[in-house]
Image (tube, one colour):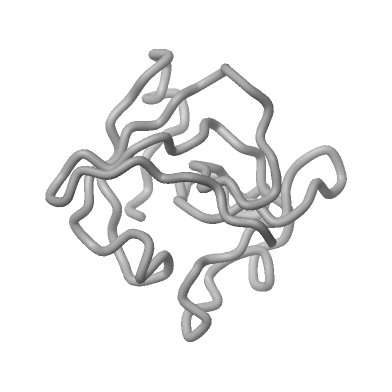
Length: 113
């Protein structure tokens, strides 16, 4: 995703535009998703919006893998792209992606890891 301050997601439900191929095939470049702050706790397998501690200027959409050092270890769904915790380390989750609303509306259930 493009650099976006995490403070822009200040509402309980916010819209985020996905950029890049790291979450394909689940999410593709240009997909618009709804992100929920708060609500139930993040679980492994959830798609989340987060900020890597080593890249605080970058808001990313990734899949939560496991809790680590008070944050989360995240992976993209596209195995060919490694711009995730393998490159940037632990991330702090800002919110959980609950649905894709454009261009193909769909709920995003968590995936068992």
